Length: 401
Ligand code: PMP
Image (cartoon, rainbow, N blue to C red; front, top):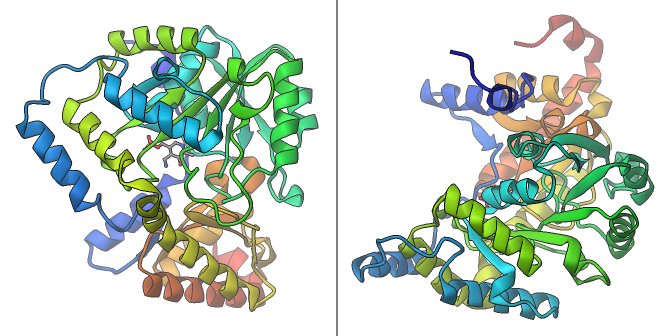
């Protein structure tokens, strides 16, 4: 039977780079130890206290249908969190609770450009972005953030692509680069959105992981609250990736309509998860710092190791769970480098190309394994790159798996 173009066209037919990750997994299954620096998931599980709150909530009867937009107490707590963090008054009516940031990205695109509109996003990008935009029925158009600008997008490039665009999706702190957009970038982006009457969808799921500088939420800038949808989540900030709980913040009218979408799609999220989310939000800033601390420490460690040699360069990263490495001097693409590194050194990293064109010649290192494993893996990566550079021409002749 024929399937819809929308469903069959989701992935664009190309490889998304996850084959390295899956190949590494199958190597592990065959008994070869592999250092997995591919995936953005904490190496600690959800804190026991949050799980206990979840368990208690389920036993107390939070097992039935919930309010589709999110329970009142949770919407209130999220509104308070956003008001406190951004100093911009935010009401429960500005909050929609969704099953994770990913669902937030989807409803935001349906709401702003789902009827075939042109949707801009910044490349390099979190791998799901183009597929999410297509799933929402819109046309994804990439705007490159260039390595020579340390991957800070140039508002002039966005302006050049803005004609007829309905929305722009940005992500700071950024996956995959770890770059935190500075005030100039954010102000420039906001100005382009205002001038071109575009929605801004701001993915801020890493907002608790900023090591240098500050996270600026563009919704706080003049004239932006009415045209910005902020996507947030407890996945990264509270190590709750599997609980699937996040939110969208936006103008009341947009949130109302997006609430109708949840009524007709996800039908709300489980009450015991919402109660656990409420408990997690109450754990405070020290708890969030504790969850973020390993990434800060490991990022620093990796950058210090990289600085000791000249072959590989680290993209200056100020936050998030990743470090991006420029490996162009080895003569290989990010893809080929990652494939060789996996086969020959049993270290799995993501090719930059899986995050878009502008990250080609790079690999992304996830800081999500224990410090000693990460240290050995990065030492091995550096050693491998050094050998590669020496026998560059030979390696090219041998090809990849
Ligand atoms: N946005 C970005 C930039 C991400 O990296 C991720 C997850 N890796 C998500 C959104 C989705 O997160 P969630 O678990 O909240 O759906």
